[in-house]
Length: 200
Ligand code: HEC
Image 1: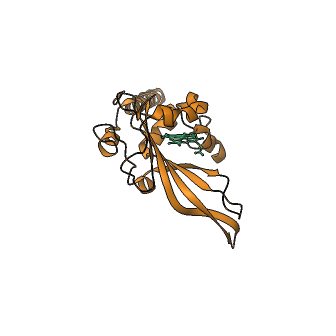
Image 2: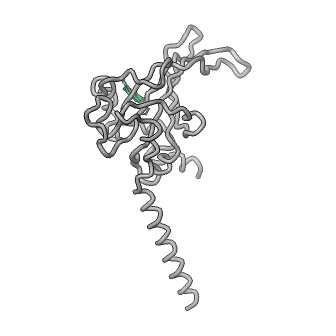
Image 3: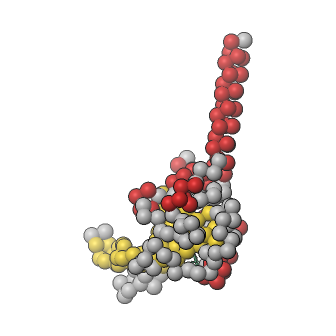
């Protein structure tokens, strides 16, 4: 009897924790994104602190470098830390999620480990910001559930993009089904949760 009662209270406690977790998942806790990284007219900026505060998702290495045979560029992708938690729970990008793709020119050197390539200089940034509210429908940077912007290395405060339909979305059509993001390239986002499998 006592045992049963304990089990029941355990079940109630677990249920309450689950309700708390699910209401947390639905709460729009990302207003910070729009305060910190988006100007009132919808202009997007590159988050100052993405290298220290964001979660690193993965790298694309772009072929075609110098005669040493290394890559021409690395594309390093980051996400804000709150969104990674939500994505892993819900498999959807929450309102305010920020993806930063950093473009780096690469340098290839013969090192003690062998021929190896690394960062040479910043070459610009692509930023996507999730918008489930249709906040800036009149802006050429916002639509299809995201804000879209490209920045030159020389100016992280003002995008060069004026029309995401012409400058972005055509190339992202192959990943339309996963909310326009190449989730399969990032172990932390992959719908099949490869990271969990690796750790088993
Ligand atoms: C020439 C095709 C092309 C264009 C144009 C393009 N993208 Fe992409 N984008 C890609 C591909 C392919 C990837 C993943 C591979 C890579 O980066 O090398 C990617 C990755 C990204 C990522 C990392 C998240 C993800 O999808 O994996 C962001 C952020 C991004 N693009 C934003 C933009 C924005 C914003 C624009 C417009 C200003 C844009 N892209 C224009 C092809 C393109």
